[in-house]
Amino acid sequence: MKDMLEQKIPASCLKVAEFSDKKQYTEATFWEKLRVRIHILHCKHCYTYHDKNEQLTALMEKHEFKLLSKSEKEDIKAKLSL
Image (cartoon, rainbow, N blue to C red; front, top):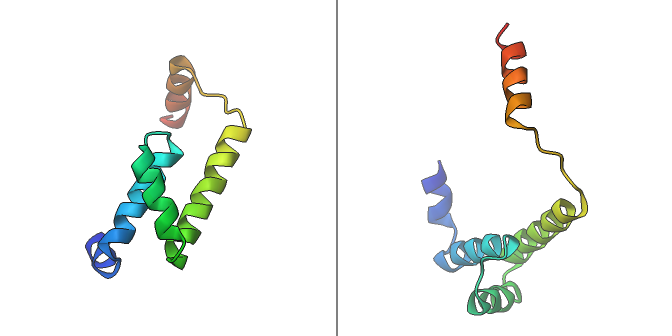
């Protein structure tokens, strides 16, 4: 299924999606960020993808998430396996 989708999406859009994801995790280089900006100026689909990615990043940074400790996870697993 994934291969079918990738065949319909241009290679440049796949690269831009990859760079956009890297940008979300602050792993993108200057040139990758620039390539995203230039590409989304003329590609509506990539613009939408990038915009939603930016919104998700903003939400994740806005909220503080409490992670479970290892013992809490084990307690939950034990309760679920009953």
